[in-house]
Image (cartoon, rainbow, N blue to C red):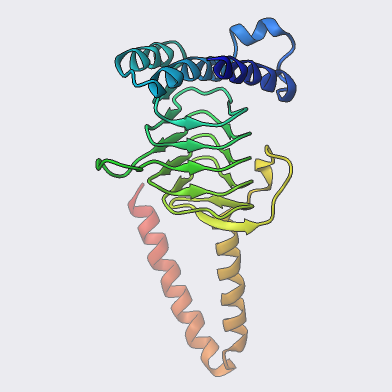
Length: 234
């Protein structure tokens, strides 16, 4: 029980230390639902480990009602976990979360199976999960990795990586010490289209001049088909 109160105190201190939006201790009591969700979780989890079932689930339900954040009391969460804003966050029964993890609003750490056993994700230390992301199944997000906003992760993400997209793909290796640098996450679609455009230019330049007239005619025909399709949707 002493350990539980130490963890709760550390959760409060962590917000004071790392959130620049906090201007007074008074704000902690009204503007940080993620912090209060962790408060209810710490209590319910301590009781759950003692073999109780109904009371921890009741406390968890009260926390969900007050904060809109659903954390199963059996989930294992480390130190200094910060749920920022927090509306709509769901954390499943067999989730394991390390230390110094940041989770934004509308995140789901869920399962893809109804079978017993480990069926939810593991987040290692210093992980950041962007707003709206879904991390599903018994997978691992490695140390220092980030998941971009609204991504859907269904496979392991190695340490020191960034994963974005639906389904999420690892786009960059190398740890950025700033956990909030979402502006540095690459635009997957933009990069693919730029590559394809440059590849087409290379192929066009490689065509013999005798073939270029035929290509231009086919290109003109494709433009007409595209225009007719666009106008048909008016």
